[in-house]
Length: 404
Image (cartoon, rainbow, N blue to C red; front, side, top):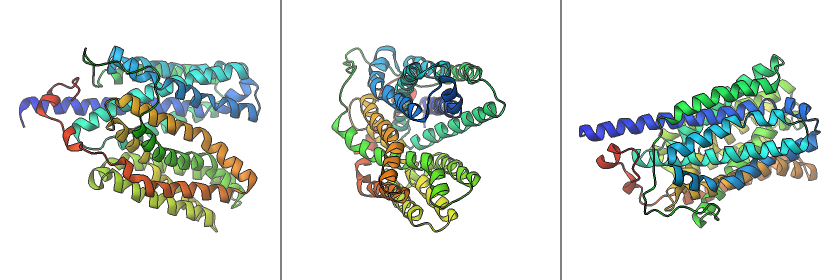
């Protein structure tokens, strides 16, 4: 290996670490917010139904704003765009806790979701670019870092809540800290810039058909993930009559399973390929769903939720990676897949509740099991032709800001 290529590869590895730090910061904002939702609800003076309405607005904001990310990156360059969008996201953490009523809470959460979605697209596009140049899977590990950041943010929020801290002060400190860390991390990401002859992407455009097909796989995985995260504790309490402590532990265990599986997922994907990994994951998630539905004992149900977590953990990172390689405009394709997955995350909790009201929670997780089986059937859409052409060359490795 020439010294030029070795230097380029070292720069790519540093860029990978920088993007991983960005994912961690992004996740920490989500964790910091989620733990203080009860305080925010009390401060805004809203009931459970109104809170449920307000919590739909982050996904709405993200869905509206994500298509803008590609145009912003084209105009300002990937590094500058990510730096600005990530700072907007970390600073927006303070908005929900300031809201005194339902209307302002919905507006704050819309802005919160919009900045989350745009920074999400920008950082995933950079992650896909690095993965393509290194020619090995890194997206699962990056999303694992997001999960780790969410756990760190949740831990900080739990401590603040335990101490009775005002969420406005907590989120102000967290936002300032995470903004500083995010700006530092962004210094090391690839500084991709569009060529003068390259047409800017449209500000708003329908996602390409390839993104819709890939997004369907992401939809199944996120639905199973969202249903398990939001309803596993309720399932153990109401269906299997467990104690509140054990029921809550099932949710924490599921989140940890997801984080660990994502951090370890890249080696598995590199060895077995995306399609085989998702098919096996679909089998595990389907088996987990069946175990939950048929569980005679809480331990069996917790094992089933763990299998669901293992099965779906790497699907969304692989869907983003496949979208980024599916056409000439990675940001647009990633935005399309992200919109579909955000929508799935939005409707999953309410859909599970609606089916449970009409029938039972057992039937609801029968639906989750069916969607998990969809991963087995549809995994082939993640097969990406021509990956060999994306291997890093000495010229590309030596110029980290250059698009191959």
